[in-house]
Length: 392
Image 1 (cartoon, rainbow, N blue to C red):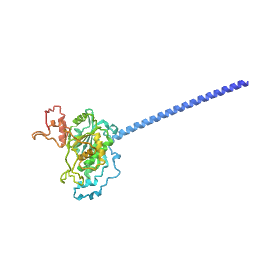
Image 2 (tube, rainbow, N blue to C red; image 1 turned 180 degrees about the vertical axis):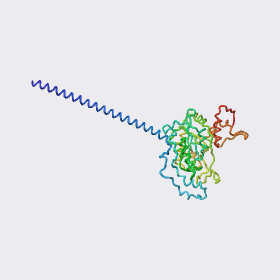
Image 3 (tube, rainbow, N blue to C red; image 1 turned 135 degrees about the horizontal axis):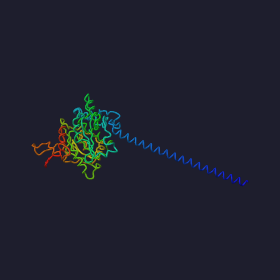
Image 4 (cartoon, rainbow, N blue to C red; image 1 turned 90 degrees about the vertical axis):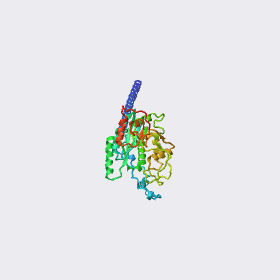
């Protein structure tokens, strides 16, 4: 009986151990299931967060309010010590103002279009970005350009996007009214970049540098850039064709083409619009540069110019300043026969300088009135336009 009791007790003990093991295995399996469900929930939450972030980014990219990153914490104060420069009191007021504020590189941004290029990560979809310098009062010019060569469109399967770059009017009630005009335009067209500095001839370089800063942040991978005034006639169809035909350059290599100007220096005549006294620039030499009415450049070159500008004092003649930045980088601008910033030069005064056959083959021509731009754009696209061989 004792032996049977021992055997029975052993069987019970093994049975209990087996039940305990089964229970432990069941508990472990439950824990594993719970952990797996928790991991799946976390992954799902992370995915939702990422999706929400993307949606928020797309939503934010469509907002036209200024980007706080570009707004300085403090207003740039004038450098009073500039008045101690020899001969300062004899200089015209606009040159004195330039010297007082030439150190200022950042101004509050009043209007922005952060989503113009689809966000920085999508900006490579933009083939040609049109950056058009425009004063606040030039409403009619901007409206005509939106309907003609600066219209945003898919041209030869390449996206063209447009921004107008502006400052503010000098002051008073008119400044407020024109700021409101640009605000209303931007609400409707989403194409205005405006900073709070005086929009003047001597601030064109500042306008240029502020735009390149904007491009670096919001549209860094756009392939090519047209930098031009709002009174040019630009054949953007031809520009896309020309840029697509560049062998081995998709915007990642140097390109700076326009109407080349070289072997010139500062104009020292005070009555000239382009007067640059020695107090602004001592050198009597300008580097080679392209006329500021309009020129084409690659994203590579625009980035180089922006980087060089950090170490080169501002010069109020904006196209010369571009040449200075290129020269410091060891790069050169190149002439293109299709860029006519000095206008067309016809072989005879008896020829019509607004014959559309002259403009069907060019890239851009400077000095057009709004109605002339509107007419010419539609004329060069006439299917029945017959042109022989014309020389310009």
